[in-house]
Length: 393
Image (cartoon, rainbow, N blue to C red; front, side, top):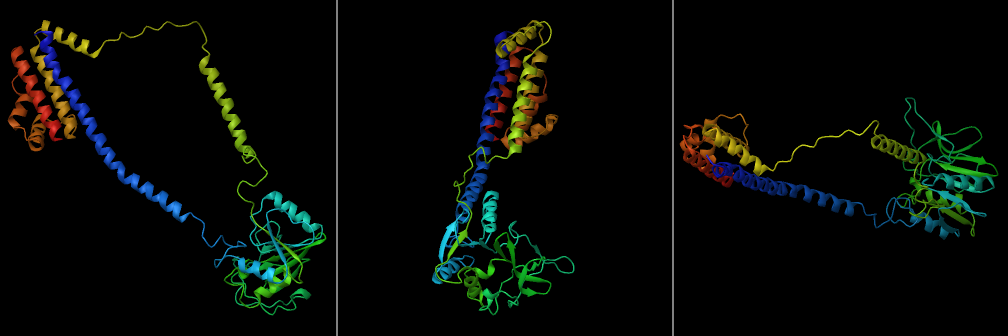
């Protein structure tokens, strides 16, 4: 048996390599087809986020220019119609004015400046009881549930500014627990919807919620009268409407926006990386010479094995190698285990590829070849079966 004969016998291995490349191409194509539905879903999610994430054309809730039901443009027009000059700002007000905060989205610095301004004699109308500037707690029921304002409420407090207000409709705002030193207005049970307290030389008016001054409820009861009485009692006044700073309009740099703990964690990672690099780079002791393995090309290995089999007249061993390789390739292509018996493999090949079952069974487990010519015929038969299965599967 010559090296060329074993090359022919090794040909199935080369052929199986080509079939393996083809088999890799087919699953790759099928994988690409399976990826299409996920790609479509991803694009649909992005489109939904773009469409659904757009701000409402009517403006954000409680915005001074928002025309939606939850907007507050009607309140701004009311104050301007009462003779007040309304200024929308994210910074602390200055001079004689009334500061209005419907929703506290201010930063710590802005809150501190606003509190200092109130202490110097300003008036703050705060419709967000959860704000740190409110300094009040929500009234609770017997089982600890928050109490909500319902129906219409009368002032029932000694403030002269509310003399023209008969009743308001809060629309579900929270009832506040009056602390000592505050004036409670619009009481209901153990709570009140409005609290007035002094802060330094200024005054803070806290409401249980901004709902009564939205576009949808400003016209209910005397909600508009209350707004005018608190913020525009006489023509010529000024109202500073406090809103959130615009994106990118802050004074902090990009690094300033990063939390100090995040910075500390980053520097810890840097130190750990440097220590790891030093540990991996330093080797203790003398260098050790390592013998590199001898590189042997695959084709030379096939030729060497063939020469050994030829010298030993090992035709049966070569036939066993060819049959084992054929069984492995068939099991891989048919998707069955490597330990599947030859009869089951023959049945599957006959069923899926249309190859004669007896021919497959004879190639896998028939009588062994007696000479090189029989070995070459066995290699050719195995290669033909591989091609048929690769084409069918």
